[in-house]
Image 1 (spheres, rainbow, N blue to C red):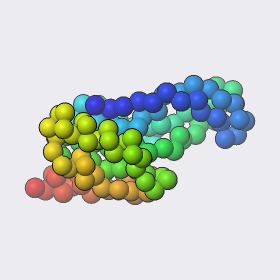
Image 2: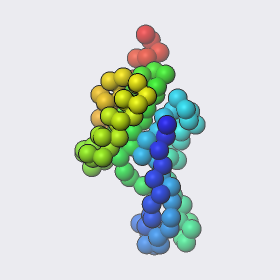
Image 3: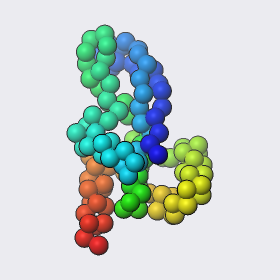
Length: 127
């Protein structure tokens, strides 16, 4: 299941703060459109309702494909929080997903995140 987080985002241009919902986990098996949103860079982007600037919200994001059995982390701050790790373990046990979720590939930049997803999709397609 994909998971959203409600936040208050501050525009980097004008400083206006507004409520927004962003994804912390994307399950493309259940929500395939979210894959497209990642690759067109629209996922977790907010348009300021004051000045109209569009900007990304940079936070940890887990990409999860149950059908192809792989997962990829985007970790802009370089680490998985303890709460994220515990949630993954709970979901893995509860859904009987297997270890691939706990052994998710780790990336640190948005471009690396997208390239890793494409690489793993290619590996799964050639199997």
